Amino acid sequence: MIGDSFEYAKEAVVGKWNQWLMLIIATILLGIPLAGYSLKVLRGEKPAPEVTDWGTLFIDGIKYIIVALIYAIPIIIVMAIMMVIGFGAAMTGDPTAMMAGAGIALIGMLVAIVLAFIIALFEIIGVVRFARTGSIGEAFNFSAILATIGKIGWGSYIIALIVLFVVAIIYGIIVAIIQMIPILGILIYLCLIAPWTLFCSRYICQMYDSAGA
Image (cartoon, rainbow, N blue to C red):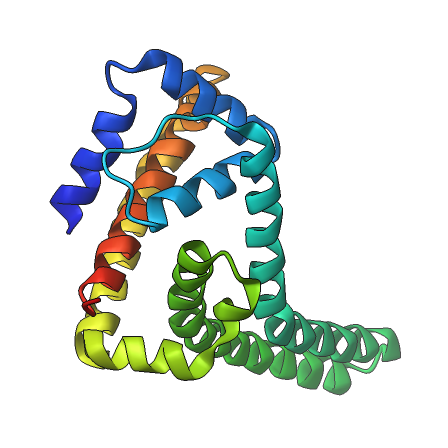
């Protein structure tokens, strides 16, 4: 899956400089068209499709963001509650209360991380369902999502996500090093965002398709 995803992303941009430029422009436009384009990849289009029909890319990108924001609501609520508690404790000026507030904030952060992982398990499959049906409602069809994960196999699914997470860490380290280069580093990073998005989308697409028809 990693090899296929890497080749998919490479073939989409290497030697196709006009398409790469279009993807960079899609990235600069707040990433909205790029999000819409990634839905094409999630639909299983191979090789990577041309960057065309910008109106549809924008609309699909906005829908994608809406789905992501809805899934993020529980995490936002937990983080907001922890911030309020922490801020309230800091305002008291009492060292004991401040320590307690810091402890609660730390616990809240851990809860948010666990919650984010659980939500991601559903969101990833939900986004693919949205990409393939065109229905935002299908992104939250939890019974169908659970059925798909069951066909993939919970163990295989979680391991596949861990592998992607490890690759993401490696990518993040490389990007951090690149960004240390003045000016040029930012430009290189900008050029890498689209290929990385294609890599992840293709990887998730293969993971979803492993469940069968």
